[in-house]
Length: 276
Image (cartoon, rainbow, N blue to C red; front, side, top):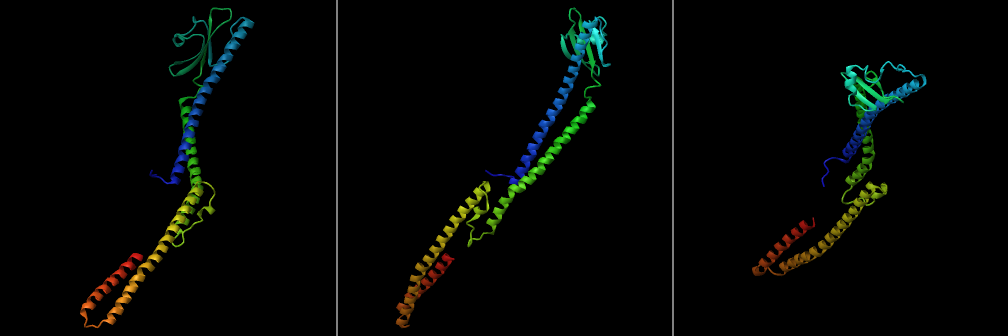
């Protein structure tokens, strides 16, 4: 598995994505909640108006005027304008929403106690609900909030990555300072028992194996040097003795001895090369 990004960048990206996700969820929840609360408050106000209308009618046997200038009341449909009849067409008892041109209405339909006629209360809420301009302002504020959360995640991710990367960088520095002649074999003592500590112990064990391997190689080189050079030295010395023993006129002996001498010299060079 190949990781294309550094650990620091992955930490920062993770915090940014978490902040963006959290900010978007929060912004959507706030926007939906505002719209829901807006409708809930208007419906609650309309229910109170219906209860007030019915209580006043039962007590005084007449129909009161609405308590708000935005509420219009109708008893039955005889006196309704045509646009109101079109809006309530098909509505049963309860709370409803309807639109006429650019105006929004919340409508309460309730049967009056002891009567066949229905009470219609029309609450014109265009001036009370969030207008498109105010909704745009709210969206801009929420977007700015999401951007702020992402920026905060970026800052926290940068700080966290520094603290996370610092022990790794320290471990890398210790490993980089090591040389084959003096490999560090106590790396884990400077780290806690965490992920970096596990990595340090793994490197420490690897260093110990490398050091043992180097020691075996050096021991082998010393033994090989002794075992290989000793017979070559003996042969070389014997050739010198033989060359002194036989006179120069005995060419039949000197030629083989010179070949042996050249071979010994070549063998010495090969041994030196291999040991280096």
